[in-house]
Image 1 (cartoon, helix red, strand yellow):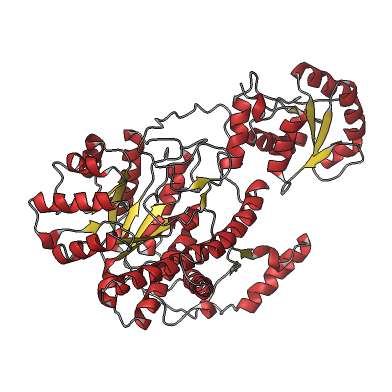
Image 2: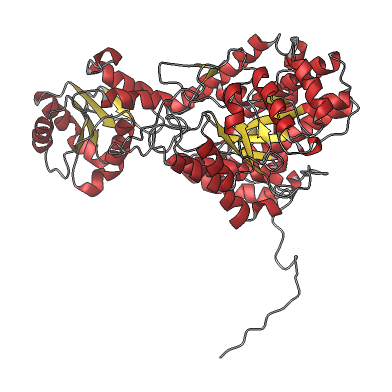
Length: 590
């Protein structure tokens, strides 16, 4: 057997160094062949931050930000219905703290048997609930110094008296949550979420210090709540940027502190259709939250957008965290993103944009005075995001891309206790259970990225028979598969069935199969060559067979068609107009 000689010596200069300029020259040479520019490789975020295709040592920042040293994170589960069995199942299944959005009158029964020194309790903003919680702590066999959690009060009016009482009696108990979720849930960008939450936090500090708290005491009361999304690196950078921003506020206030962060998987990204995909979204979001340094993480159950989560969904949510913590050991790595050229640059850019936005809000009087400015800015961002969702530039797997028309609907109980009144949904879709009901929402709407497409799916399901769009496939299967698959995917996203002609040899054959389908609309699907040879004749044959509207999958043809579907087309508009052409609207639902 041949032995390989291995050297233990590491020689970093064994290969010639490659510069960024050399890489750029090679990339430009490839792009010239395709007619694309280098800018096509650069991605721009909703904050206007340009994400480069390559980051090198030249992009390194010194010194880079480093998260505080800690071991893992707190697994926090939210309960909006006072169900003691569900609560105990969570605690026995690995949940380490509880977020309760329940009536004050139910707290004592709900927490009976819970070891309050082991499971911190976070409330949802009710002064009555806070007072009830203090009474429970008084009666519980727990030392006052061991009480942890957050009463989540707004520091104003009578709530200030509760905050004073809690601080004097339970020094480890926080009392105020700076909730950034309303800014995210309204469609805001990451820097808008950061900047607005910073303005909100400063307004809370002013209220607390104005009520007699020292700056240090005021800072100790606050915990921040941020959204974690399936955009892994942006979530990591956002949490790191948030700590940097808060450290700056603390510095100018003469206080040394570290921001306490609670990350919650995004409500806006959750879907009602194909909700199983939500498990993937929340797993990535949880991973990012943990790697980003969150102190506590809440993973929303995959069915949270549908109704009251069942036991299976809650178990999957908590086990997502258990797996990342206990099997993947992510909590044992100190700030794994530190020193990453990409993440450090993104952290720096997000912090800069958020600080500018914070300053703009402060110049307008701060929050709540500048709530109109905040609402207008976020509405503008949501409009831009909506446009990209509508043309599927921002795809939603299982909804706007790769929909499953045969999926079995997931039915959940729309029981009382799911708070849907704190924010105003856009559109007429059923409200999504809120995860920020005890927060300052400033009248901001709540959006879900999938809502517009899901409304079309609901419209299709409400018809006596599913509406159809016929795929007029030209030639053999190999010639039309690519465009037929694209067209089917697009129209399925709107709830349309898409019967196709299969392999065809003539325009007459396509027209005959169209007649058999019972459809009124046809989409030509074929190769460029088949379009050149057959499109004109096929369109004429389809119209003679009764086609009232003929579209083409592609961008050009000599045939007289009524429209085109292609990559980047206004998919939502096309689908909506197709329903309109068929005379189907919400008034036609059965």
